[in-house]
Structures are given as C-alpha cells and as structure tokens.
Length: 230
Ligand code: DC
Picture 1 (cartoon, protein in one colour):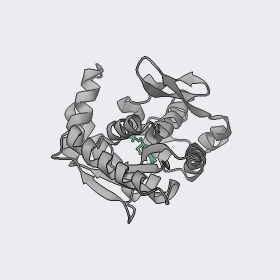
Picture 2 (cartoon, protein in one colour):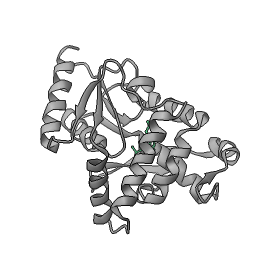
Picture 3 (tube, helix red, strand yellow):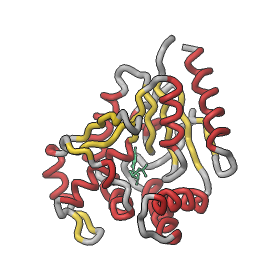
Picture 4 (cartoon, helix red, strand yellow):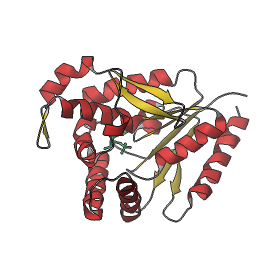
C-alpha cells in the first residue's frame, strides 16, 4: 500500500503532537514535531546569550545559524523521538515557559524558517510521515495527501498546557500560560514569514468538545481512507 504524508497544523497547545504521535504509531509512520525544531533554535539562542531579556539579537543568530544542527533520536524506553541540538539531547529543556516566550521571535526569522523547511522536506522524501506545526500543509508539503487543521478555544488550550507544566513541577500560573498562548496565537497568525493559515484543502478539527479518543478515531479514519485511495 502507498505511503502518504499527513500534515497537521494549528494553534499552540491544540493537541497536535498527541494526535500526530497516535497516527504515526497506528500507521507505522515517522513523527516529526517541527515546533521542537524552532524550540531547539530558541534554546541555542538562549544558551549563547542572544536574548537580552526577551529582545533577540538577530544578527548574532544569523551568524550562528550554519552551526546549528538539529536531529531527532529515538528513545526506546519512552517510545518517542527526542530533540537533539548539535548531538546533545535537549528535549527536557525546550518546553519551559522561558523558551515558549522566546520561540516566537525565532520563528519569525526568514533564514531560520528556510533552514527548518529544507530539513523538514528532506525528512519527507520517503513519505510515511506525520508532521505537525504551523506551515506544514501550506508551505512545507503543499501536496500532502492529508492535511488536518486543529483548533480549540484559548482557555481550553491554556488549561491543558497549564496541567502539563504543573505535572512536570514547573511553577507557573494559569494566567501566565493563557497570556503566552494568546501572544503566540497572535505572533503565529500575523508574522510575515509563513504565518499560520489553514490550507484550502485541510480538514478542520475543533477539539474543544472532543475527547482525545474521539479526535483520534476521526483522524485515523480520514488517514485510512486517504491511504486506501493511493
Ligand atoms: O508547536 P510548538 O508550540 O512547540 O511550537 C513552538 C513555536 O514554533 C511556536 O511559537 C510556533 C512556532 N512554529 C512555527 O512557526 N512553525 C512550525 N512549523 C512549528 C512551530
């Protein structure tokens, strides 16, 4: 049976990665979290002092860009791919509120996006891939066989992200998380480079009132129907 590319786009904290992982597992496909790639660049900038408070020195980052190498390594114990920056596994450092606040600045830079898009396209050459992000169906794989666009209300998304952070032991308030999500929605949809937009042929999934399993069954059916037509 032919393999397809599944592009999942949508707002921050919509459950894109949960769904993408479930689909990849069910179909035996590779899963790529493109948000983690932008987060890895933000982490590099953070560690190298390119941020002064939240102001980024774009010049320093552009100079360093050729030295930033992002890969994924599979963790068999956790059964998931983890993000590596220049060979170092940085998975545990890239989802903090600090990096979440800085990453939008990184994702606005044209040269960063070009580099990430090239890497992402290379990963899709063999198909059999589920990739989530903001511009996957619109820019990275405009010919993806299945495109999903996920959304949910900001409050519901903030509550889900807040619960995750608290479970990890992070000290954040719900308001902080909601503010971060609202700001990122605004940055994602208004930036000039590859803003978050729904591709014309994407299927919208609003999961405000869907359970994870309902959402999964819906998407799996769409994927199977699509694969059957190949
Ligand atoms: O999905 P996430 O929250 O981990 O994404 C982190 C940031 O990267 C978010 O601010 C949006 C940005 N991003 C992007 O601009 N393009 C993508 N394909 C994926 C993420």
